Image 1 (tube, rainbow, N blue to C red):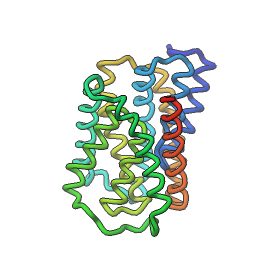
Image 2: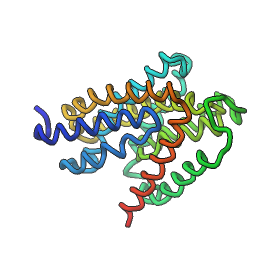
Image 3: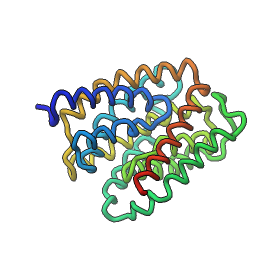
Image 4: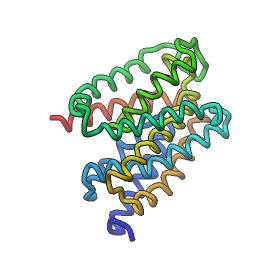
Amino acid sequence: MFEVSLDLLALLIAAGFVAGFIDAIAGGGGLVTMPVLLLVGADPVTALATNKVQGLFGAGTAALSYARGGHVDLRKQALPASAAFAAAMCGALLVSILPTDTIRLLLPVVLVGIALFFVVKKGLDDTDRHKRMTPLIFGASVVPLCGAYDGLLGPGAGSFYMLGFVSLAGYGVLKATAHTKLLNFASNLGGLTVFAVVATPWWFTGLAMAAVQIAGAQCGAMLAQKIGARLIKPLLVTTSLILAIKLLWEML
């Protein structure tokens, strides 16, 4: 039934739980699951597609947890989520057309810049700040850009959403995390919609990982809501830097 042996499935399930926990707090769950999927024998496209399957459930669980905590109104965010979904579909369809190798070269620099922003910027806490963009403009520009990137490549998409919400939408760190998880869910769904047609995800393995992603995401979201920016900021900085190092290592 499963696409891998039971011992490898156990490894993937453990990775899914850890990824769900980390991703619910600061994003970057793919840092855990993608290497393990490749390690157990998935080719890069299958690994990416399977990662979308299991990551979808983790992001959705985290978004629901944050919504129950009052940090995001799912109904009011329906339009931005729809924009992220559509943009991710477009991004996934453009994988074979756009210069993804060039984009990958720039990613480590951008991710280090994001990490430095959250380290150096003073006063970043769970309090909302001055908005630099109206919700309409933000939803029509930043959200589709991040969603398209998530469908095209994926690594660091949560960091990009977070940067936009904090620096442009004026959200506090916890509120930004809550909204990021909702849009991550939408863009994961958009990317998976395309990959389900053009690729061959490991559906049964992905769903088994998804089951524990749900548990990990629930634990991570609950902890983030208790501690807030004091937990989210350092973990976000750490995951951004680790992802930048990983991408540089792959290039070299």
